[in-house]
Length: 318
Image (tube, rainbow, N blue to C red; front, side, top):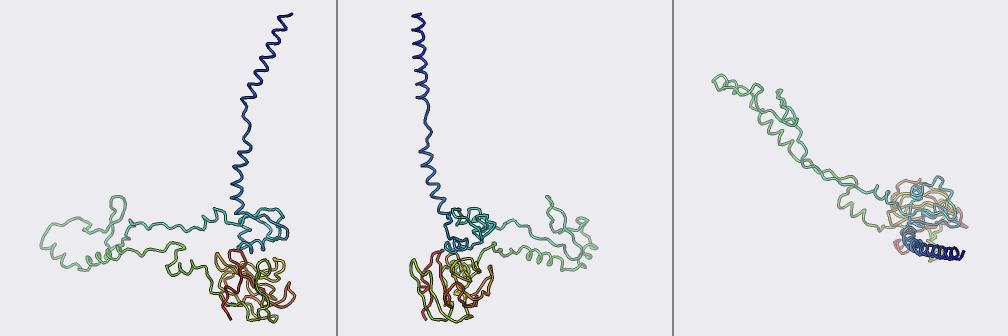
């Protein structure tokens, strides 16, 4: 009995040692490391994303980011532009696939292009060269003819224009073709104009200035007038929005001038342009009104990359 007790004590001690050794060999999961590693990625992703807040609309988000709302629809696979949810995450920068799709691919012109061959007048045909490429046949079909007085007379009686025609055709066909412009390629003068982001602005209405820009307050200027007065495009561009989807703007037109500038024309009585339409500087795009306003006026904004800027610093003095 005494031996059995000693044996049991030894067995229990051995089992305890094995359990302790097993626990010591277990490595805890690196939760902190994985969490820390995930934080930079989340920070990077947030630059391209926007979290919808109360009061936002798709149109106001697009205006605040200097975008066409249709781009937001496409980038975020939105089925109904009039329905977005608070807390919804929206992409506000073009995904890499969209940027790559817009890139212009320029391919070099092949230097070994074959010269077109045409049959000679009089029925002379092209014979197949090794490899199947046609060449001009410069020899009689029946091979060379032995010299004789009769052969010489026949040769002299033939028209003399055949050989010059061959030379003329060869020179004309061998002339290098002008290098075609790659798709999307612009001339140097056009490139300079396209690369300039500054706009030669004009005033969008002729009325009196009754409201000025203020940081955190009025996002543009207000110009008074009579109902039906002309509202003009302050610069050439493309209409990216026309409607009443932005609260406080009434009937609104937004024109995108380039990748930097948008202009907004609010409180119109009627709108004369459609989304996607190109407009020129000075073109009448709307008529002044008081929709969603306390008086007839034009509220005009200039947005630089989505941020409101003081229009009086851009418009010419008058």
